[in-house]
Image 1 (cartoon, rainbow, N blue to C red):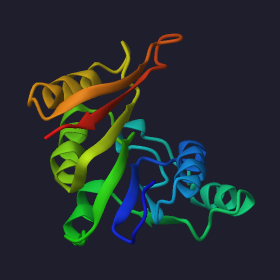
Image 2: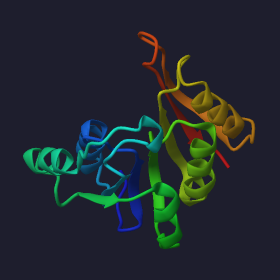
Image 3: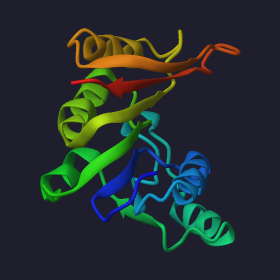
Image 4: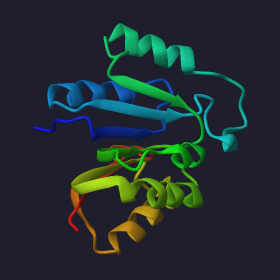
Amino acid sequence: EYSGERTLIVEIGSFKGCSTTWLAVAGKRRGFQSLIAIDLFRGTPSWKKKFDTYEIFKYKMKRNKLETFVKPIRGDSQEVIKKWEDSKQIAILHIDGDHAYEAVKADIDNYVPYLERKGIVIFDDYDSTHRDVKRAVHDLLNTGHFQIANVVEEIKPGWGSIALRKVS
């Protein structure tokens, strides 16, 4: 079991809160302190669409009685990290933000250093339609500091994910 105020789940890319809900429910059961959900709640800039999912996200957290466990931060993950507290250790990191290679690589470079030893980093959209995500994951694996913990194979194009465990 995880416990203590320094043990966090961090999710980059929460959108409407579906994956946030699953991570939060599991995290509460396992004794995590909280989940930090970082998102613009407008989609990624490349989508070029106008919408806002923040109220939907907040409603979903309230409906599932997660509003005190989940701490949403509305902002770009690359800006949020500039205000990060060094004492915060991440046990589980879920990366599902902007899927461009440079953005995924930046999230890795900025947040993985806070991942505790034996921590888990999960990448959504590790599949044939998101080559940039796969490339960034393979770059991380090639460092030798991670091993594959689990892979969800593509059920259909665009549906896959991978979890890596930090080994050193």
